[in-house]
Length: 112
Image 1: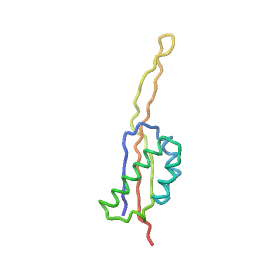
Image 2: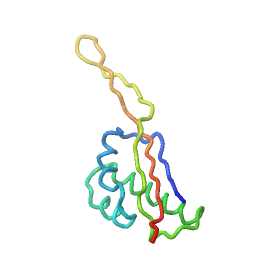
Image 3: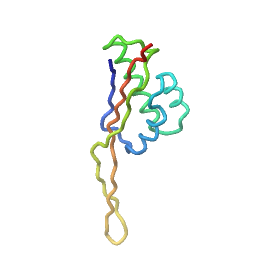
Image 4: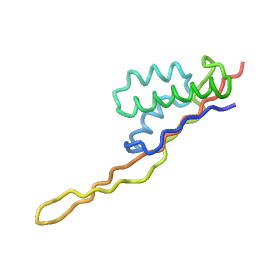
């Protein structure tokens, strides 16, 4: 049985989120939250909130034991890019791409 949580259209680049996700993949939930608490990245707060949501989904929707949960899968896909323009010299304009992410966390129960 799997429990999942998704955060869509998060205003942070997927490349930055993947750095944080690589730290916690395959870890137990308690250990992952502990790692994220001491990781000085903006994405770590977003991912920690997402893990807590996935744990709540596991408990309430699937009657899973929260102590036996581990991070089975976690990934960040690219969302739509917001395009903005910044004025430059000599009447030119430069495009600024504000990237968004769709972050997914999947939890599973450890057997045994």
